[in-house]
Length: 161
Image 1 (cartoon, rainbow, N blue to C red):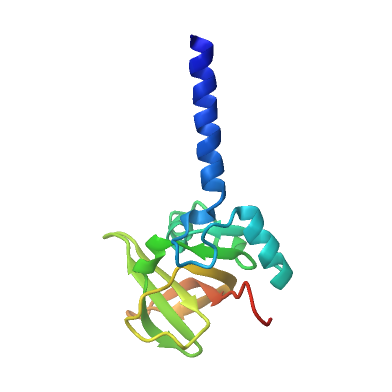
Image 2: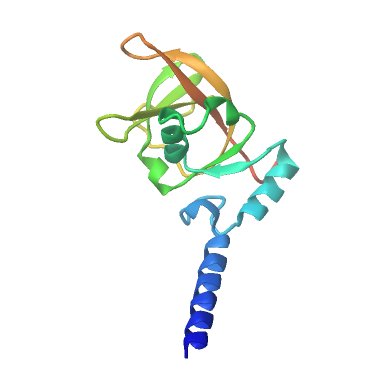
């Protein structure tokens, strides 16, 4: 009887892992990466550009940087998949050729990143999808303090390069 229970548990865990494998980063249905596994994302991205890795969630990555769990310098050159929680970011300002996105995560964390793209209107919510981290840049905050932010740009999986 114990053997049957162990086999059942193993099968359930295996099915759960395979079900999640088909939707890397918990991408919402409207995202270009919805229904794709990590390997599929990397295969498509690798044909379009030099992408060394893919990670999930602007929110999670920026929190890891702010909590000093990861260095900001490791992110340029990766594909960062924005998920549904990242749609809480809003375009808050423009600085030169960049749009700054912000999200008040809690009292201690104001999450921000820059997008090299001026097509976003102030107040417009960020959209789930694939973005390439193209660098790190220092900006002045509204209070005049320097803020080092990840710089992203949209990443096209399909269509002309």
